[in-house]
Image 1 (cartoon, rainbow, N blue to C red):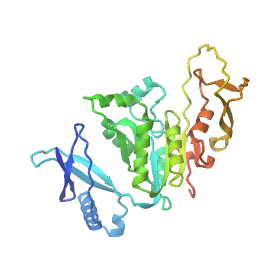
Image 2: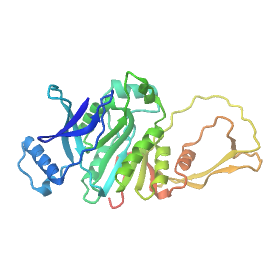
Image 3: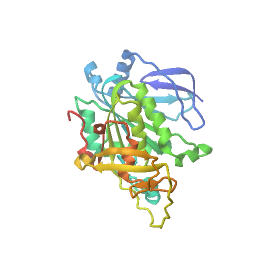
Image 4: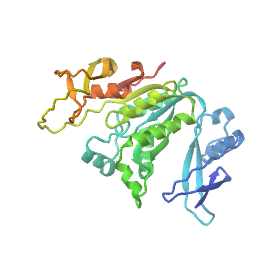
Length: 335
């Protein structure tokens, strides 16, 4: 279907903007400052408010819109435009599952129950901390939720975040369609899709500073470590909620000796702010010497959480990333 956009009392027709089979569409609409001001004024009056000054209007960061198919279609397809300044302030890119919403991603049975059978529950302290960053005159934080959850959960997630007290945010979820093979990507590795999505946000706002918030349950350390290496000047901090790994079933493993390509892990855990620091990180040895500190990488091995983080954030400044357990412990510079 060909899609037009209604903002305020004006319908904007965008050439070649057609919805795909999953109902999604993409296009670019450019509005003048005057058009935005008039739309915000009308939006406030419709809520029963009085006329506001231009300075007061600047406090509103969300502009309502509707997608219009044709005049005979009475359905309402509502959306929101987030008015994000191109520079100044901080943008927070946040994961959802087990970062701000308790999901138990590392336990598939609990994940299904928490997603489809139980009421959503917020991670303690996260809504309050995000609101503090949003309302801070210094940070003026804007928020982007990037998740591998399907877009079919958008309405439930949006309502949950509003009820839980989270600030308004853009949602970047996985687009799937139940009638084709895209459904299979729901259970795929989230690393590539997250990297692509975060990259597009960083490139869209090259003059904003970013904070990445995630957890250690899935691939956030690897994703965020990659992004920090690629965009060291844009990304100010990385915070990861510490999720204990699921215990592995006990089994006996026969170790095989090898004369090369062994992995030596040297690390030291500092308890201050639960940061991990390395003393040599991960080094490859090819001296042919077998000792108790080497692991044959030809065998299936379990990498410790400490070694995993050191590898994920190799080549990045230690002070830029840290772990946390509760939202109340998160602080940005000049908090």
